[in-house]
Structures are given as C-alpha cells and as structure tokens.
Image (cartoon, rainbow, N blue to C red):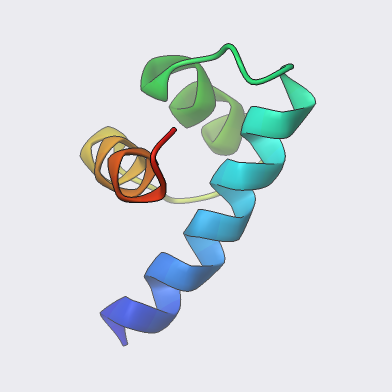
Length: 54
C-alpha cells in the first residue's frame, strides 16, 4: 500500500518540479500539492525528492 502511494506521489512531485522550472524545493512542492488537495506530509515530499535525485 505504501509503495503504491509513493509511486502516485512521485509522479505528482515530478510534475510539480517540472512545472516550476526545476528550481523549487520540498517546502514549495509540499505547499503546491496541499493546495491541489493532496494529503501528503512534507517529510514524504522530501524523501521522495531525495529518492528521485531532485
């Protein structure tokens, strides 16, 4: 279950990072995802960004 959620959130993070010209950090992406209605923790965004090498 967690792996499926991570895959979905990783796609959201990649999309958000690309939309912000690849210059935003975890805090900005976290706020953006929250505004879009995603129930995601900041630490999850940080972990998935690190895993993706962003």
